Length: 110
Image (cartoon, rainbow, N blue to C red):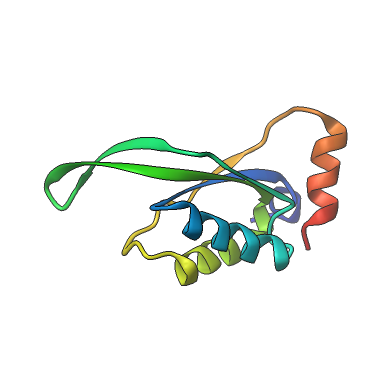
């Protein structure tokens, strides 16, 4: 992957079973400068297929702002701090928005 792609801002979505787990992961990522900002939603209802059955759960969603070159470390940190066997970690490239905010994300992540 070329360096210009690695320096693009991203949003990473992670669902957590409870607020305590969500806060633990958010603090870990922020303390390590792997994320500039993380929003924690109060509750989202997730309906998903798992091991052949349709499941339903109340979860907390992390909305993580970072940059592409840190994604591997973010995934590793989430897995180390998450109780799920297969935690959701999905990255979306930020394609626009407030230039000042995007510049801040880039500055605040290592």
